[in-house]
Amino acid sequence: MSDEPTSFAFDAEAEAAIAKIIPRYPEGKQASAVIPLLYQVQYQMGRQTGSAWVPRIAMDVVAERLGMAPIRVYEVASFYFMFNLKKMGRYHLQVCGTTPCWLRGSDEVLRACRDAGGLKGYGDSSADGLFTLSEVECMGACVNAPMLCIDEDYHEDLNYERTVALIEALKRGERPAPGSSIGRQTSAPEGGPIVLVEG
Image (cartoon, rainbow, N blue to C red):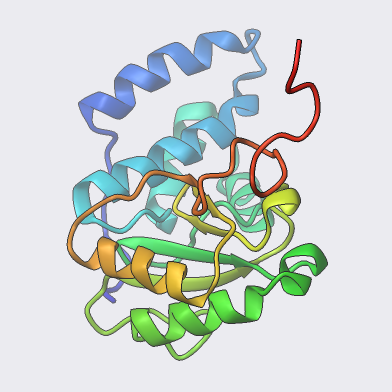
């Protein structure tokens, strides 16, 4: 993983998004747009480099655009776990280790990520630059536990084998559809809905 870039400028796609974001906030309150602009940085870095993260120089650009002290942007970016402050692999594997996922097998999801992704553990990035592994707290998909968030896609009802298959698909350049890996309809019970099946 390389060092921080020495410059950053928003590209045309980010500028188009920013032109819609900033007017949402009252005059003099543009600093409230800091989170959406940090997202634009992360998305742009992902598009341009294959690694979705927020370099320090980009935080300085956000601060200047919003008329904020840079330290205020650093505080926001470092407080929220959804902003990556170091270069990441192409795919960010986020394993939920909170109690519902743990009770339903998140340790096996973690083991599959390590085995199939060539990762040592949390915080590690694979040698090929494809994967970075993180542990996250509850992502709100408890009913379909255990789950793995890849970038912003939730993959639910996982086990060791289904997680390995998911990672192998990513290695092939495929992007599996998010959702239940067993075909569960939203949060219905395994096997399908059991109430209100007759009119």
